[in-house]
Length: 347
Ligand code: SAH
Image (cartoon, rainbow, N blue to C red; front, side, top):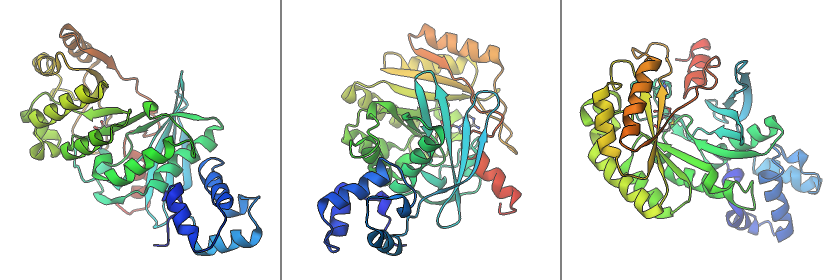
């Protein structure tokens, strides 16, 4: 693989170009073209001499994702993108419009190792980590498509961000830097299935972002059935690090809870969850599960979701039922990539 220029931060770019004896202002220009003006090709860098552009494109081909599909929901305007990567695989991101601005949901890996029973991302297995540049480009392409500034990022696409922590941390730093898009870390959420050592690494960074934990069950018995990661890091360990995280950072943890009919949605489960989270600086998001082709799980009825939420509220826990966006465009995690690969007969 040639040098992946888009993944280099400012100081790494300076080091890389030292040998070429490029003046500092040139390097700054190139960085700004890539990370602020968001070009996807050297030919667009109009204040860079043609000869240098030529040299760059030969020595440093841009290995950026290219858009192959954009499916827009006719219900809520959510756009799901499918990108092809330099090595021929695919990755997805989603652009959502909220009252407060545009949010991009970024993928961090091609495929996923976590094996959650209800999730499409895991079905084709794990392929590889995404580079920081490939994550940045998902934001850049979405911003260009929207024609407006992206204000929020959620690392909730395909993959487990804390299984690719180094690249993900670099992405977070570069996208929030004033040399780049300058998106505030307070407007970034990172979602994890509960990789405890990864949460510790994140805590060490003290980023002021929102940690989201895909909990989906109040105990090991239920969680083991749907999330293999729980066998390695059981609920008690996960809760311990979450408590530590919220105490040290004073930031509210957001717990995701996908409501699966008859599996994790009983009043008893709600009470157990209430007891477990009581007094913690947190928020619970209830999400009726999205149906994935070939999956045995179905969403809990609305009345069940309401009763579950009401019980949590009685424990003083702040709860919302997440609005479902893009249900007509396979917008959940891993669904579009899987569909396209099936159409191509790859999986
Ligand atoms: N691996 C990380 C990041 C993925 S985020 C994590 O697990 O948190 C994607 C979110 O969507 C996670 O909360 C995941 O559990 C949830 N999800 C996956 N498949 C889903 C489905 N079919 N319906 C509803 N939520 C789903």
